[in-house]
Amino acid sequence: MQLFYNPTLDLSVSQFNFSEQESRHIVKVLRKKEGDILKITNGKGYLFEAKIISAAPKKCKAQVISSQKKHQKMHWFHLVVAPTKTNDRFEWFLEKATEIGVNEITPVICERSERKKIKFERLEKVVQSAMKQSLRVYLPKLNPAIPYSEFLEKDHKGLLFIAHCDDGEKMDLKRRVAPDKDITILIGPEGDFSPTEIDQACEKGFLPVSLGDARLRTETAAIVACATVNMINNG
Image (cartoon, rainbow, N blue to C red; front, side):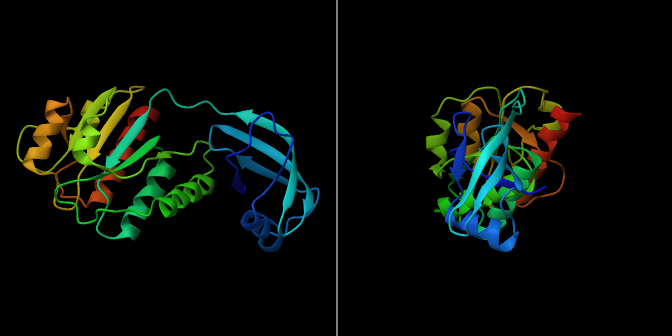
């Protein structure tokens, strides 16, 4: 099954055009023709079936023939992760987190962050591609990068956790996660959160958690957290 993405689709649309890039891929690469049926999501939970009515390589046109709404899971999972030193590792994390299942991702700039800026548009495309590849119909919300202290000042709901490697009492994440509960997890940079940042998070209600005995890279820690939450909510 090949899944396409069109954020403008909703129940009021009967006919639409694919973008020039998508049109070229559909007609030239996949060799689709008039009458062929395609599956499209708008990233908001809807799966549409549409029939190609004009297979033009620069403007492929399709007619919606059916729609189906897939309900979102009861919990909202928000991963807050410091960007990695290299772009490709952060892109890998975004891809895998989207495949496993995450609702929202916020990159945060910490005291020890080696990367202070991200290419937002590029990362959005990575998330979109991973959504299509994994046949998901909900596009995770990717937020612009924000300073760590500024993120903590926002309102946060549900279960709040900070995963760090510093000494101190911590409980395994899998023992803290509860099914169908909103959850936010903070994952620090390669040098970990500073003691001050850990204290600031705890003052805001974030509970320290462990992701295991091994010292993990930022992107690995984020995926372990993502897999743990997914396992608890699908067990």
